[in-house]
Length: 257
Image (tube, rainbow, N blue to C red; front, side):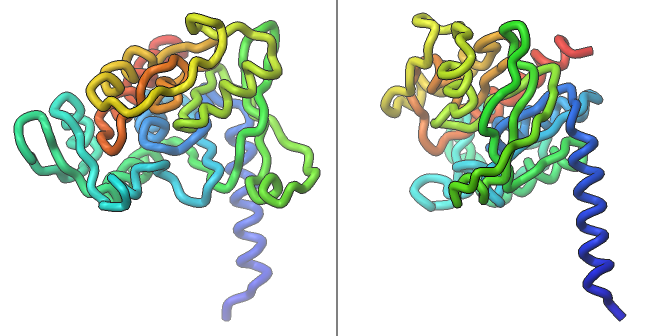
C-alpha cells in the first residue's frame, strides 16, 4: 500500500541532500544548453565536482527545435567525434555536413552528463553572482517560478572555484557582472559587445575563439561567448556549441586540479 507522506518525505530528503552536495563545487554552470551539458560531462568525467542550473524544466536550450522546429541539427565534420563520444547517431549529408536528430542529441547529452557525475538542477534561475576581491566565486540562485510570479523571495548561494556562463543569446550572468560588480570584462571595450546577425561560417569559428575567461573566475561558452565578444550567431548548426563546451572543460580541467 502506497503512502503519500512517504513519497513526499523521500523526495524532500533526497533533494535536500542533492542541494547540500552542490553548495561548494569545483565548477558551477549557468544554463543547460548543449555547450553547458558537454562542458559538464567532460569535467565530471575528469573527476571535478560540477553542478548545472537550468531555469526551465527542460534542458537542451535551443537544440530541441532544430531549425525552425524541424527537429534536425547540422554538425560539421570537426565536431562529429563529439556526437560519437556521446553515442549520438548521425548521417552524412554531404562533405563536412552531418545530420542528427535534435531530440536524441539533447537526451543523450543530458544522460551522459548525469551518468558521468554532473548534477543538473532544473527550475532554478541564476539571479546574481558572488564576487570577492574582484573575482567571481559563485552563483546566487532562486526558483524560476518565484521570479516569474514576481515574488519577493530571498535567494541562496553556491560557491565555486570557477563559474561557466552558457545561457546562450542573453548572456545573463555576464550582464549581471557588468551591471553590478564594477569588474572590467576582457573585451575590446570592457563591456558586452552584443551578438551580430547570422553568419554560420564566421560564428562557428569565432565561438571557439571566444570560449574563454571573460573576467576573473567567470568563463563563457556557446552562444553566450559570441554575444559577449560581439560576433555573429550561427543558427541550427551546433558543432561550435559542442566544441565550445569541450574547450572550456579542457581549460578548467587543467586549471582546477
